[in-house]
Image (cartoon, rainbow, N blue to C red; front, top):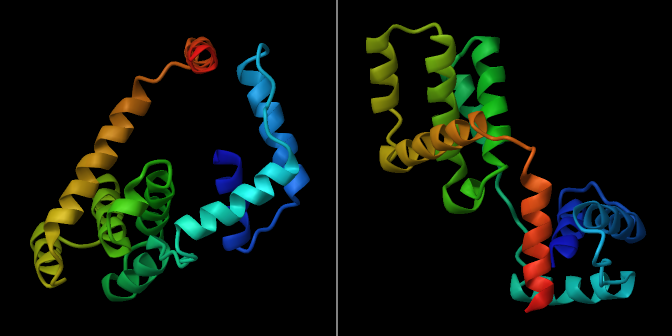
Length: 179
C-alpha cells in the first residue's frame, strides 16, 4: 500500500514517475531493510491497488498546502526574507508528520511564521506581533497545537540516532513475516 501511495502522490502532485521506477525503488528499499524477505508485489499489483486506494479516498484528491497560506499571510505581514525562508523550511518539516492531514493549512502556516519569528525575531516589536496575531481572527488553539507538535518533532530529531534503526526495522519485518 505504501508503494501505491507514493505512486499516486507523484501523479497528484504533477510529478509523475513511471510505475516500474517506483516499483524498483520500493524493491531496493525493501532489500536494504531486510535481506531475508523479498518485495512481495509486482507492477500489476501496484496498479490494481491504486484503484482501490482511489475508491477508498472517494476519488477526492484535492490537497491544500500551507505554502499558499504562508505566501498570502506574508503579503500582510511583510516579513523579512530570512523569516519567510525559515517559515518555509518549518512547513517542509511539517510534511514529515501527519500534521498536514490533521490541521488546516493556515494553522500550519501561522505556526511556521510564529516559530520563524522566535528564531529570527522578525521586524516587529513584541507588542506589534501580539496585535498582529490577535487581528488574524483565527482560532489560535490549532496554531498552538501545531507549534507544540513541531517542537516535539524537533526535540525527537535532536535525540535521534540512526545506528540501531536498521536492526529495529529488520526485527519488525521478521515479526510481521512470522505472524
